[in-house]
Structure formats: C-alpha cells, structure tokens
Amino acid sequence: MQLNPWKSDQERISLLDASIRAQVKQRGLYYIRILALLSALYWVVSCLVYGAVYKRSRMVHNALLQIIDLDHGPVGQNITNSVLQIPPALELPRWQLLDRDFDGQLSEVREWVRKHGWGAIVINPGASQRLQQADINYSPKQAITVIHNTGRQPIITVSYLAPALTNAVTRAIYQFTLTHLESLRSQPQLLASNPQLLSTLVQSPISYTSEDVGLFSFSLSPIICIFGFLVGLVMMIEALIQWKMTTLDFFLKVKHWQVWLASFGLVTLWAVFVAMHSALAVAAFQGPQYSSHALPFTVGRFFALWFNIAITLAALGMWLCNWYLVLSPEFFGVPTLITVISNVASLMTDVDLAPHFFRWFRIQPFNNGSMLFQYILSGSYPRIALNVSILLGEWAAMSVILFATTWVRQTTLLLGIADNAGWLRGSIFFHSDIPYYKDVLPVVHKAASFPFEPRRTRSFVISESTGETASLKEGNLGV
Image 1 (cartoon, rainbow, N blue to C red):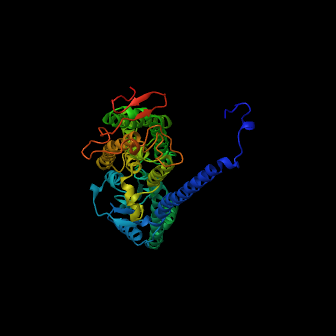
Image 2 (tube, rainbow, N blue to C red):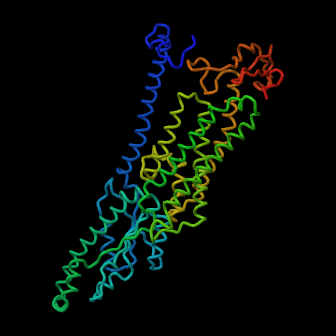
Image 3 (cartoon, one colour):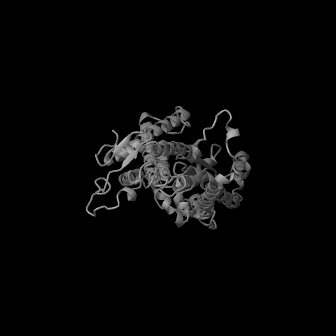
C-alpha cells in the first residue's frame, strides 16, 4: 500500500488494529524490559553518588590537620595542648603535632602545606615574647597563622576543613584568653598606666590570620573541573555513537588494522580537539588571573591544561568506544551512566574521605585529571608522575583492547550476526542484508583463518544500501 503524505492519516491503520497487535505487544514488552534495566541502573548510580557525597561528611576524621609550634613558648604550648585536646568525632578532622622546626620560617611551613597537607595551625615564632613585651604597637594577629590548601580539593577544604581550622583556633584562643586574664591581675601597674593596651590584652591577647596557599578558592573552583570534563565527555559520546552508526561500509571493506587505526585516531584527535576548547574556556573566564594571589595563567600552563584534559578524555573515550562497538543500542546506557556518574562522583569527594569501597576512584580518569588540573592552576599537592602514568596507562590499555573490539565488530557484521546499529540476529530491531553465515557456510574447516579466509561451499552476496553487489568469494567488496 502506497501512502499519500498529504492524506496519510486517512490511509494509515489504527494502533489497535489486529494486524499489528503482535508487534505492539512485542515492542511494549521490550520497553518494559528496558525500563526495568534502567530502574536498576538508576539505583546503582544514585547510591554511588549519594553514598560518596554523604560518606564524605561522615568520614572527615580521615583527613589529618597539623598543629605546628614555631614559638616554643607559653603561647605555643597552650595553643598546641588546647587543639590536641579537641574531642574526636566522625565529622571532624584529626590533629597531629608536626614536630619539625622548618628553620623557624613561616614560608617553609606554607610550602610544606601546599605540597603535602590539607591545612595547619601555626604558632608564629616569637609569639610569647611579643605578648610579654606588649606595648601600644602590639598586634595580636601576629601570634597565629591558619593555613589551608584549597588546591588539594576545593570542595572538601571549603566545606569541612577550613571551618574546622577556624573553629579549632577560635576555641584555643578563647581558652588562652581566660588563662591570660588571671596573669593580668598580677600586674596592677599595667592595668592603671595603659588602658588602651589593657583593653587589647583583655579582649584579644592573641589572634590569627588566615591564608590559602592553594590559590584555588575562586568562585568557579567547585565546578570548573566537573563542568569542563563533563561537557568534553558528552561531546566524545556523541562522536562515538556516530562512529558506530555510520561506518557499516567502512567496517565491511577496509582491512582490520586500518579500521583499528582509524578508530584510535578518531578518539584521540577528537579528545585533543575538545580539550582545546576546554582549555580556552578556562583561559577566557580566568582573564589575567582569578585573584591577585593566583598563579599567572601562562602559555605553558595553557598547553599543560590542554594535554591534561586531552589525555583524560582520550582514556575515557577509548573505554566507551570499546563498549559501544560490541553492545547493541539498548545497552548503551549501562556503560555510559556508570562511567559518567562514577567519574563525576570522584570529583565531588576525596578518596581519603571515602569508604574502602570507593577507593577505586583513585584510578578514575576524572579524579587523576582533576588533580593535575588543580596542580596546574594552583601548584598544590603535586602528584604528577602518578596521575600522568595512570591516565597514559589507561589510554594505552584501552587502545590495545580496541584492537580486539574492532575485530569483533567487523567479524559480526561480515557473518550476519549483528547489523549496522549493533542489534543481534533474533532481535525485533535487527535488519541486515548480509546473510547469516550458518546459512551460507554449512562446513568450515578447523584450520581455516576464519572469518577472513573461510572455506566455503558456495559464494554469497552482500547487498549494500547503495544497491551494489559485492562477492566475498572473489575478494570484491564493492570497492
């Protein structure tokens, strides 16, 4: 029956027509099955994200903060004891007395925290002496420096560790102030001679200044890695699906090693192209620099950021490409959702603040890429060799596996097991003009290098979408 496109509804049948009842029922059951699969997948990824985010608030005690006494006097001893006596709790970090001299230099402490720590409370050199010799020029804020490192993980630092540092030093200063008031009572001459100094010593004999050595606390810091990587990955997924759906003739005609090389080149070059836009976006939104204390965004940092994003997306692109080549479309969502959600979850927490189940986040490309990202922009917590080796190793391993998955894809197409979209023979959506190999090759010798040089009892024909005829027996695939 030929339908008139302008009067199509008059010529089409009803959805309830008996002639298509079987097809309607078949497709209805199919979508119910897909719905069940996606429902189970939803709970898996939801538990993954919610579990990781919730547990980070219950495992803050896995983070270790330092108390560093450069004063070695009454002030340093008092503050150190007060901080170390804070009752432990799951929602609070643990404290460690770092018994190192740092040559008495606060700059050495800053550098150590930037490279290795989350944060520290530092009793500055000479704090006790300045308090004992206090005069009208005395500044209480010179006593203590509170240092935190947003460059290690901005969400964790800003949400949990920076407030913990502030609360701890405030508590210690309050306790010290109460003790210091008792000592002031024994100095009646000071009480009478200098009322302004007395007011300072009574209200706040010591105080603190706060510093961020990570330089990663700008307004975009919580989302800059997540958004940049996620947008890039979505663009990768679109290219990978197009590669699967539009390369039937390519897989049928081209040699296998060249198919693999083309697939490898597509994923890698596409990742490089997408990464260039991500790096340019960071440069565009940053301007000269995110803050007056941030590291300058140089040409070298731009190319380092470009390489970092490219290798991160290339590793994930190879991983997903392998799945897409061998799966039918109904299962595309399984590796996609698990890959995307688990990688995003790895950016929303720190592995050290996660249960043992989530320790596999350490090998997630987003996790390693974000650590490099933060180091490039802030110079904090350098783990360059580890992060780069993990990303390059995953990219290389997935490239080797890609050699096998392209062979599987090419073989299943040639044998009529799968169609262009990836539907397997027997599926209600399967459609392929290539005959099933069992119908045309009833006998295959065991020593044959199947499927490229199979022994056949007769030739068979591949009817392509262009209407051309290609004979596999004669080695002509229509080229």
